[in-house]
Length: 155
Image (cartoon, rainbow, N blue to C red; front, side, top):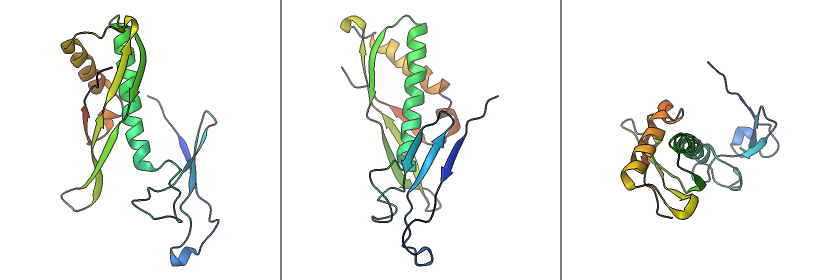
């Protein structure tokens, strides 16, 4: 078993809290020493009460799913003798309302663009098996009810 920690810090720095005009900007700090500026998405809280330049929780959720899939895929490719030279994913999360009317990230589409040593991609069914296994073994995918769709993009 392992634990993974993050420290979230918000301090009232501007605006009137009781009037709802306070800044929602905050930080996420991780055990490796990295601190990330965070804020709600501008679709949830309008500027100036948010900072669109900061990472929002929905983006971080999509990035965590994509990163986990990538890391698992790279490991499986290595184990299968497939040499990957680059991996890029422009992942997209879709928010919809659930049956109770609450917003949630209902679907994340991963669009990995992978380049292989020698410029030769494995045959399609082998890649499909690798992506399926990566999805099945990804810790984050196993932790969420969001539908995760993998649609590889050709070189």
